[in-house]
Length: 202
Image (cartoon, rainbow, N blue to C red; front, side, top):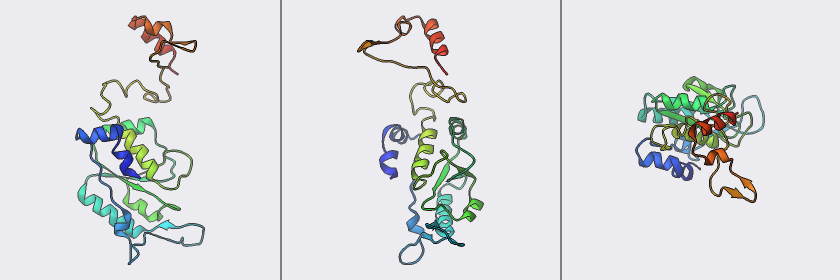
């Protein structure tokens, strides 16, 4: 699931420019027994399967060998919901990250003793932590210097200052089926344009 996303668009550009690098670890490599088992039924009963702690910790220990100072993030339902401010904070930290993806009914709760942060991307449930991990990776990477290009690209966009929404933006043609670009944006008057954008930001 990861390779098509990590190797496209801005994430590909960031790697090509040596701004970031990604390394994938398949949990099955650390599975138990001849079938490389990584999940089992839940103590106390209940539907579904749970990722076992032993393969998870072995995989994490391998990741820590490669990045001993890395911060470990677990994608999981959590009171802490990912936001633009979280992305900015993590992008500014200068740290490496190990991201663990839950699956099935989640992970053995004892894994929390081995992680630094538990993060949710919203109050809904997905099949696994892969998509949330890619959301977090993308939202951090695009904020790193040199990835987006324009120095103010990330500073003026939606959610860059709390709950703000960016002003409406337009491009050619000036008139599409009677829907016209606001005249002020065509005026060349930068003070007036700034005032219009400020008024039309939410």
